[in-house]
Length: 338
Ligand SMILES: [Zn+2]
Image (cartoon, rainbow, N blue to C red; front, side, top):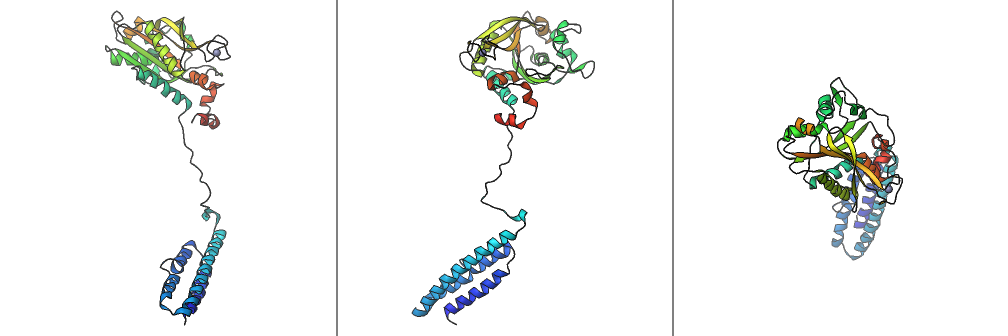
């Protein structure tokens, strides 16, 4: 049998075998046996060098034809298998993949991190405390006796007669003072607070607050103003002015509301209701009674404290129209900040 005849008979055997392959695995075995570099066709072609001139020419032509035919038959068989495979087995590797959903930081958390970072550069450490508080820490030790009229300012979720969901982060002041006393103190206390109130576009029953507290020698209201000016310029942007307005809180004396110049830089807009100022915080000098309750001697040291919201600065920064969007778990809203 001449070499070209052997090539053609190899083709017959290979094609017959290919007809009966019914799986990807069998098809791959077939390809390895006949078409691979060490396959049977390659072995026959390897003999070309040892046959005489004319026969060599014929065999060379036969080898090329058969190689192309087997390759084509292989591809066809591949198509056939793919078309008959059950749907779940059919994989189109050229399709772009479906990326997995990746979570992101919530806008409140992002804002909190920004705030914490800024205060960290000014020497404040983060002090986290409990969300379920006692009436004593949430009110009494902060100079709000059980019959104090200012309690009405903070409608409260009570768990029992003495336990409640904290209405502000201020009880953490007492806990921080009692932990650090008599050392000088510089902490911020971020966390969730709860108020038993009707919700609106500007108020939620659950919200975040960041409390700040500094105690030591020579701390004055001017220190607080300087701190706020530095904070406002870092958080809201350069060129912000800060102003204090007299106010009242039972746990600070004197007490102030803190305003910063609005984004409109005094021109007047809907955000600032045309006043040119945005209220960002309340604070003041720590009341001597509160200092004492924390273990400090009010004749020896002074301190300032402030509390500010987290959602409202975020609201102002991103021009969000309704605070209730923060916790309604609408992915369309949340993904804008992820
Ligand atoms: Zn404005």
